[in-house]
Amino acid sequence: RTCQYLDFVLQELGRPAVSLHSHKAQSQRLSALHRFKSGQVPVLIATDVASRGLDIQTVDLVINYDIPRFPRDYIHRVGRTARATRGGLSICFVTQRDICLLHEIEDDVGNRFSAYECDDKEVTKDITKVFKARRLANMRMADEGH
Image (cartoon, rainbow, N blue to C red; front, side, top):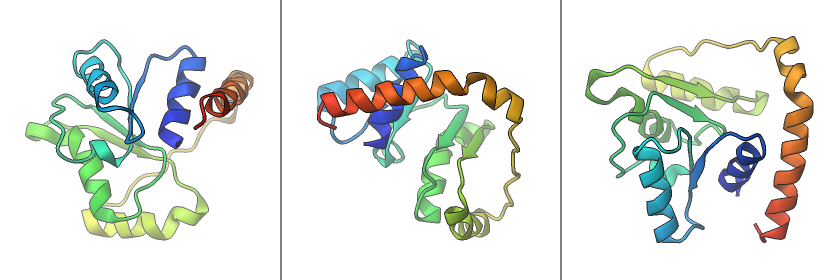
């Protein structure tokens, strides 16, 4: 549900993206994956269905909108960014409820993550657009029975 919602939000913001989740038909999943891998679409929004078993060679950035519940799942998700000794970046959106889990992940990977503090001025300049996109995405989710 969150995966499809984020896909709709990005569409409303005019950002090309495709989503990959278990509620899509196999043909839709294959099409989304092809569009991402071929570079037609720069953003793939995926559930953990994409964290294992998919051959995606050139992923430079993984954003964890929802932090994984288990440290090993984090490793599988972000492993896409470090193939063949290439570097990559992982960003996790974290709330206060996630702090203990974040520390477990840090312990498991043997690395402390650095915090990124948002610039309030940067956030507020686009907040109206984002709220509108979220509202329209919620309406679309309801219309399509998600």
